[in-house]
Amino acid sequence: MLAAVVDRKTSLDGMLDATNGNPAYRALNEADRALVRAILNSALRQLPRIQAMVGSLLETPLPEGARTLEHVLAIAAAQILYLDIPDHSAVDLAVEQARTDPRTKRFANLVNAVLRRLSREKHDLLATVGSTIPAIPAWFHERLVATYGKDHANEIAEALLTPAAIDLTVKSDAEGWASRLNGRVLPTGSVRLASFVGSVPSLSGFEDGEWWVQDAAASLPARLFGPLAGKRVIDLCAAPGGKTAQLVLAGGEVTALDQSRSRLKRLERNLARLGFSADALEADMGKFTTGELFDAALLDAPCSSTGTIRRHPDVLWTKGPEDIAKLAALQERLLRHALTLVKPGGIVVFSNCSLDWSEGEDVAKSVVDSGLCERIAIQESDWPGLEEAVTPLGEFRTTPAMIAPEGEFSGGLDGFYAVVLRRTV
Ligand SMILES: C[S@@+](CC[C@H](N)C(=O)[O-])C[C@H]1O[C@@H](n2cnc3c(N)ncnc32)[C@H](O)[C@@H]1O
Image 1 (cartoon, rainbow, N blue to C red):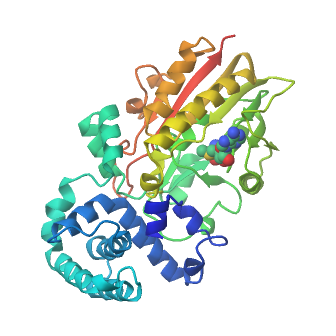
Image 2 (image 1 turned 60 degrees about the vertical axis):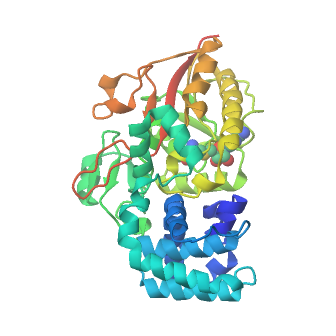
Image 3 (image 1 turned 180 degrees about the horizontal axis):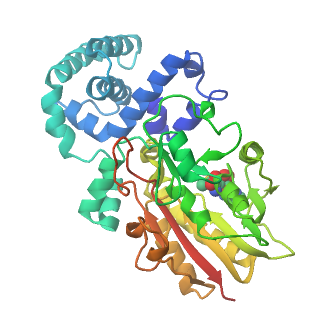
């Protein structure tokens, strides 16, 4: 599975899907599945450091094309270095795996020797090689440094190593839900749960549809519309519906459009649990036209998702600079089209969960500069506690290094971009 992510850019979520995922994974019991997920997530989060530490123990570099061998070593190293698994079990399993695979058979002794040394020297290695190089691939680190400067880039890289907290968007009474669920109200209005193991659906309020899981940063774009009573609103990339639910909650008459039938079905299920309704529409928004223009539109566009690496560490390996360039071009096309779907004077909020300015700030600038719309600046004074996320131009830019941890509550936000645009022509 590590090879599928790193070498073939396969999404981890797809392979871990309980019904359509990897058959060997699906055959495991729940405890073993959890272990597989923990190992893969650690390996993917720390891969550049793992590779550097393993590399420092090799007398000669691994032969060209020894990818399977690299992956066997990385999976064992993730357990030895970062997980609470007895080192000897990780070593024995890796040696057995190397022996039984014709591609790695002749390296079984090397696997044994390298991993035993890694186990002996791990404290030194973690303190030296393992903490001095960024845990993210070089291309991504370079982009972060170019955009955010070295210090913030390194803070982001470090923040990506901590799994995201569970945040809830509540229908009402955030303080009450925070006290009932051992949470804390964030400046976004979301409720952040203290470290939590268990199943979300078993929590109070889930069955009754009182809240839904949504990263605090992901809740910002829809909040930017304010009250929507009496307004016709279209959510153009709606599924699985976290933001649609917010638009309904704000009182809008909402059309939820998405091109994926299966994701739209998920949206319908999610809204039903919350007791909300919206017109669900399966369509490619780039081709969608309407007789009656909308008052407002949300375009939460498809993106590289680099802002969600804390929960999806595979993104570091499945996406690259070429994908980002393609997605940025697609977003600009979709945003220009979104503006044609609202009345003149109507509002479009454009957002996505990329950390890359080429998918956010640059897209908005290009569309604003072309004269189709104007930016309505977000005011810092309206968002106490979130001032650092409001840019000089009045847009939202969140990163995983924002929101400090507090007591038992971890910090961090997904990387998100959001801008409010008013159609001018
Ligand atoms: C980032 S997700 C949206 C998340 C959603 N707004 C939420 O808050 O739950 C992007 C969605 O856009 C949809 N999508 C991508 N391209 C589209 C297009 N051309 N037309 C309609 N939907 C599209 C995808 O199917 C996916 O569900």
